[in-house]
Amino acid sequence: MRTAMLAFALAALGLPAATPALAGDAAAGEAVGKKCLACHDLTEAKANKVGPALWGVAGGPLGAVDGFKYSADYMAVADSGVTWTDEELMAYLEDPTAYLRAKSGNDKARSKMTFKLKSEKDRADVIAYMHTLK
Image (cartoon, rainbow, N blue to C red; front, side, top):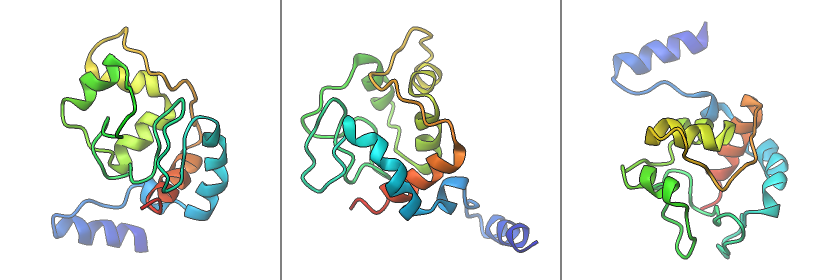
């Protein structure tokens, strides 16, 4: 009941309601995020690996990590001005290639990232953790 009232109040004010990602647990996300360490740096050092460094990515523009060589398919989406909102991150982390195909309209687009984070709770937790990486 309280959640419904909050959503109604936010809608009345013209503000977006909280998404599942906003309800994530950053501490749990840090634990899940250990799966990402093989390919991504999560520290302030911002060292690119197989994947781009993820420090400061949440809320920023897609494809903007300095020094990382993105695929052409990824940059085609980035050039459209996409920002890493919680909703965009939720969709991307679930299936990166499907995300790029949907966003680009190119059914042959491919992401370098093949890892899929299928659990909605895990994605929400990781996104909450990513918001702490600033």
